[in-house]
Length: 127
Image 1: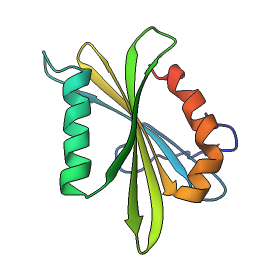
Image 2: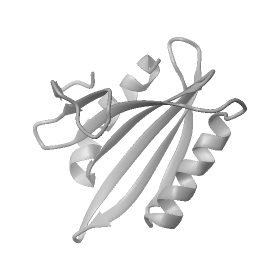
Image 3: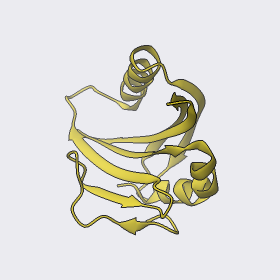
Image 4: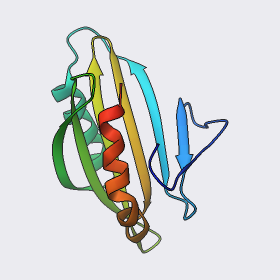
């Protein structure tokens, strides 16, 4: 769990796990089954397409990381405006056989930036 976050006992919206910072930054874990032949590149491209073309988010950064289990993951950082306030949405994706794991984070940009390193430090624990 990222430093400064508290676990939410009953995760909402189909998430397996959720935590929140005192300022309202949310971090959540979701897993879903993927069909044979679906890989990290496909999932990354589909995520970028959905967020940039349908939701008008702006992709600001894309980078790779490796989990402690040795799986390769992809981290995407997007910006978007909500009611005149700049927000960040970060999604980290890892595929393993027939499963896609995602860690998602969102909140106001100035608040998310305070927690950014702590959030990034959690990514290698994704399994």
